[in-house]
Image 1 (spheres, rainbow, N blue to C red):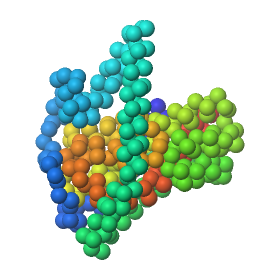
Image 2: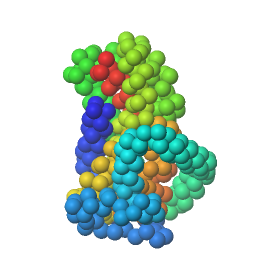
Image 3: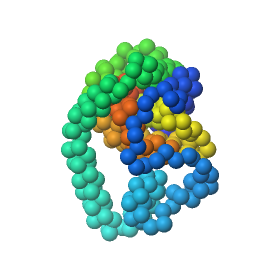
Amino acid sequence: ALYSLTTCMAIAVAFLFNDLFHPGRPGLIPLPESTGQEVAAITVSLKDTLMNIVPDNFLGAFVASDMMQVMFLAIVVGIAMGRMGKYSESVSHFIDSANNLFGTITAMLTKLLPFAVFGSIASMTVSLDFAAVKVLAKWTGACLCALLSMLFIYLLLLAVLGRLNPMKFIRKFSPATFTGFVTSSSNATMPTTMESCRRLGIAPKIYSFSIPLGANVNMDGTAIMFTLTTLFVAGLYGVTVEGSALASLVSTIVMLSFAMPGVPGAGTACMVLLFSIVGIPPEAMSLVIGAIPLIELFMTAGNVTGDGVVSTIVA
Ligand code: ASP
């Protein structure tokens, strides 16, 4: 519950900074041409959105790449498997293998990412003027300020809920925050995070559960980046995110932060999915993909710090 609470707070902070900085407006940047998927105005009602989460057929959800439907199916399958007794073992084995298969394919593709980023930034630099660079800097600045504000919220939570002097936390936990920053991976940082928790005096029975859990389900920094980036790009495309699109966006960000692994590039890989929810073409990724690795350093530091803060409060 605490992990979900901090994620919701992170999303709220991101909305606040989007309103303060207002980095995305139509006409600021030449937009990449869409090669198919059009920008659709969001006119669907909340009722339709909820009804649409239930797919007509199992495979249709995958064929249409409708992530809300896929997540709905995942939950239904999970509940059903919990009731299947011994048969669930083989299904679970199959799902694990499929998870591994797609994870391996993604890892193979991610190796090409540096070339994609190089190409994307090179072509962007050619076509962008200084004013456009300023626009991107504003969005990056909004992300960094929101992440910094989240840090203050953490310290406040520590003082109020954890009754701990925040300075003590900063002193003992900073190695984990810095390791998160340099590795861009909550998972790779886990040993340092646990060591920092030990130095804070947290009992091993608490942190040996809360840190691995948090490294995989608690992504406050990523939630901030997700929210601000989607709103920024939506602004550039003149798409207003409200009503059902807003509800889908927020719930998907919460679910993604639960489902995403704490490895480098995980958030970047999921970004397009959020674009599709608000009706932005996937090509828009080329606008932001160059700066996300920089933001990822800070957001992973935020993700790791969030895990430590919640563990400390629980302890
Ligand atoms: N790199 C992040 C982490 O490990 C995950 C992400 O890409 O958002 O926490």
